[in-house]
Length: 487
Image (cartoon, rainbow, N blue to C red):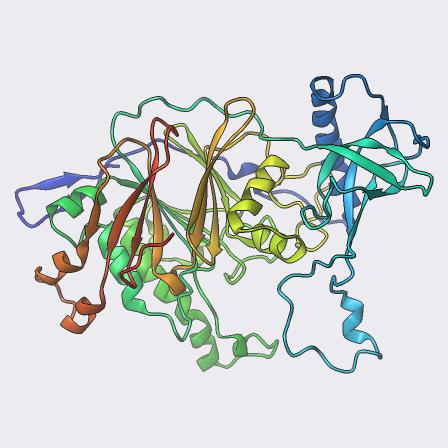
């Protein structure tokens, strides 16, 4: 479907560019899965089976001279390789039993955001048994429960396994990148809209909608808007007042307050879907199931926007291809949970670890809720994406990582829009690097926005050159709240 964008002169029309879209969410759909009381041991077994087969195939190129042993087959002083699931003993890890402990008189005034401790230690487990790991090579602060690895080392007299080297799965195979798409096309990423929050600014999101749909700016800005071929909303789109979610029956007035944020969101999404293909991904605050993978938000919540065939309600995690460029992303729960139980310099580092471990959510189901699958682990990364995005982060970050076989992945942290006013836009083709301050452009146009809002409005475009990704890729970031550029 080709959507025409009207500009100042009625005789001139801009044609929105089109892209070939293919959804790859099937592996994250629960579908006909039936819960029969099964526990989580089966998903751990499926994960170990997948990853061990992969790691065994990598051993001939890593340490071909060393034998592979099980935990039960370890011999003191004999060097070997063991493959298994890591378990992390954590001194500060919260326990549900603590809530009912008689010895705990009161909850701490300040809740911890990270539960790591210098006394944490790692254990490796396979079907035959478990062994405590020692040595300085494997740092407990870096790894989490649920990660699969191959370890080179030997058993000590104390019964520990002294680790001398670690083999991780590394980046998986990647489909070939298109060399030249022939024209510039943009994909917009936004998250954390938090419609319904008392402190949210409706004007901020409306300005964002008006800009990407081509209703703001001069002809040059509208030409850029016409190149947007996809919008992805990565979770936490609404925020319901917590006082209403107390388990009590709601009166008609409270029911109206409960649904009001969703109605407001639908009005805004309808404006986008009328012009641009739109994917909406559920997040932790959205009306969806709690456990990962989160299933698509029901279309009945969006009577206006779901009437358009450009509207797609997707799973979390979400995977799709656009003109043979593969995108994979989440609403941020997997990265937030890694931040609680391990340490890194930034969220982008956690993202890189999940790809190199070939698992989107290694802490599930230990500390991150997920469905108890019996015969598969849907979070296993079988094919390397070209773009890996995570929503609802504190700030905008990006990094280009490379694999041992030439894989190249663009990592993107999408900040919370309600807090920062920042959305991220990716482009797949070369484009002259410029910075646009659209604040002055909006001020001279005849818009319905009152002057006091125009004076506060800043919409800054900046393109970041990310080198040879899809033949010179970039990220374009614009800020609707203040005059500063994210770094």
